[in-house]
Image 1 (spheres, one colour):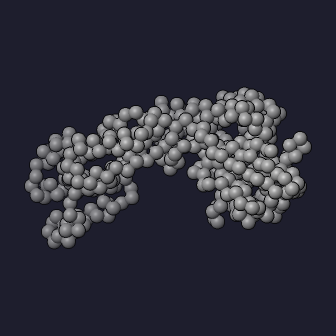
Image 2 (cartoon, rainbow, N blue to C red):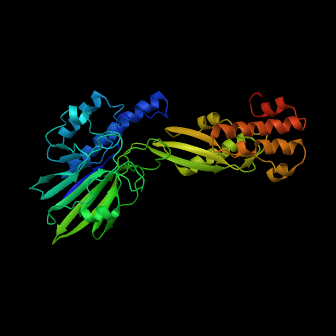
Image 3 (cartoon, rainbow, N blue to C red):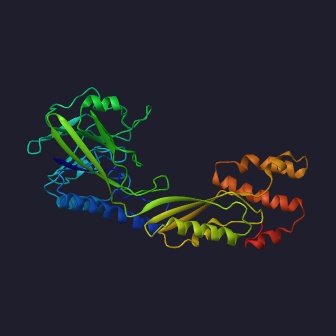
Length: 384
């Protein structure tokens, strides 16, 4: 049996720019901690091959300290063969860390955008791979090739994408099947789909180890893979192992019909509590529905009320509780005002929508003769 740990897309030294400096520093440290835990997993499970399928670094931000950290970690698993196939964020270039530093005798880095391989007689295993040499790779390096020895374990690894017009190494299932690998370890897709394990075709994306934004929600980690080959047939088993210290999560809260900031806050806190989010969670709460036009929401204030999570933010996607169809058809100045704001009210741009909603609330109040200071004071803000 051959045992693998398949990881990639770590983006060590990532700036985590969406967070404040303090939390960003914590996240960078936790990303290293997650890597250290993977190395410990390799040791304790006697992994044969540790596969890193690109974007180990964010080259723009990589530090010498991180290089030394990796060298120390790799030295902890001298009996494991470690392979790196550089991706579009950490390409193998003349001045890259891969070309300037030696990561250890048990570390093998693919240096070219051409297919090459390493063979290990003791394991009866070939490991094929390639590197990005820049921020794009327009061809597929293993297209037209086939694994040399069907009787051995054949592992293919690399960074790539199945999109037809991709600039990140175009992959297809036909090319993978024609190559004949027992397992193809892929990187680049942070939200990994389920592994494909069928007769004649076995490949998987490992996904990222730590989410870096709300487009990468849920628990993240690596893939533990076992291969058993007998009489030319290979059985492949994959298991996802969580190594992420934190998880990004999104929660929608419908506040339809609510008439005060306090009732909106109650609804948000109840929904968060029901979700059982913990200190490992970075949470985005999106408010939807139509609420009373007198309610002026503060995203920052509501977010500060959410306790028990590592980070919280609130996005207001509510609309004023007006009969919009009536207003749009209204021949008076109110209808004209509504029609004028409609494109901005329906905009995908958050700032545009927020400004338009406020303009609608205050504009209609002014048209109907309401006291604007009373409208603002009710929710604790000042009218502008």
